[in-house]
Image (cartoon, rainbow, N blue to C red; front, side, top):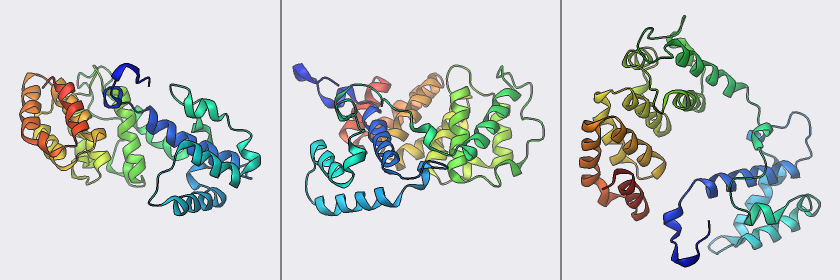
Length: 264
């Protein structure tokens, strides 16, 4: 972002630096790999792993610039570095110029996405006409990893996390079959609470309050506070009350962003 004229970095906070940094490392690892068939970015490569360890060890307790990292990469992988458009990656605005999704084996993601689609379609109008897909059972998640359960909820949120939420009947069926409220995984819990709040489940108020008291990361705080606010007048009042009680616990940037979300 452009920060000329006294614009503060906190006022233009976005996911771009996080996503761009992650994608850039995945991209750099991919072009250093000697594997062309069957490459899966989730598995990493020994060469790039060794490079990162060496880079961290060399620079621990110090400060590293983008230029310093570039120099380290060029020294370790001189041929691969010639393929990198450093100017675009480091200085161009916006999201990355490369889609690294194709670098991953998506078999597990497809399974969780397909299950989410089934739940979306079982009551696509959100009227509670059907509370679950045909043949749905607790076994649906039996072989899922935590990452797959998280992805299942993420995709379901993409389908039904906006102005077209799930019905309370579907929420009840999801809980009955999968016991999602018992999860201790913060990623899973946060997404599940968003779905519950979107459906108008007032029994999710207190668990959401417990979550925002236990976690200070904006990736959890902002979605939960916003979901409370969107759930209706009672939810908005509850969000404001909870924030008034907890705002002193948060990092100043997190406090500022949540306050902006709530108009507090």
